[in-house]
Image 1 (tube, helix red, strand yellow):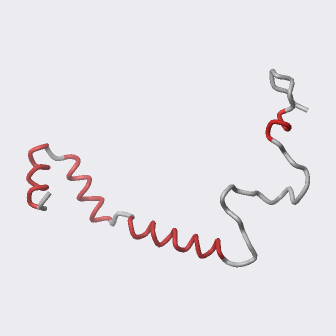
Image 2 (cartoon, one colour):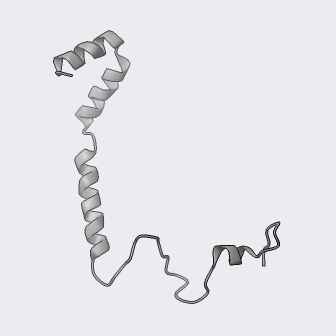
Image 3 (cartoon, one colour):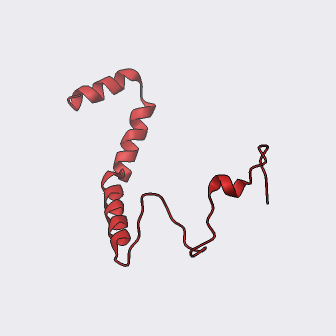
Length: 82
């Protein structure tokens, strides 16, 4: 058993429990059931990521915007109504 400087076993501090399925990882806030709730949640997450992910054209515009001068940035923002 490993001890910290306090002579308290690490396992006691972590409150490790030997009961149950050791291969099952439990994550706080995620309760898995026999249903496909996790699959649905992952699908919604994937859709949301796709929705906010920049297209190639948007990434190119952002690269060019970042490389240009402050004055050019102001003109672009003015044209866009910002």
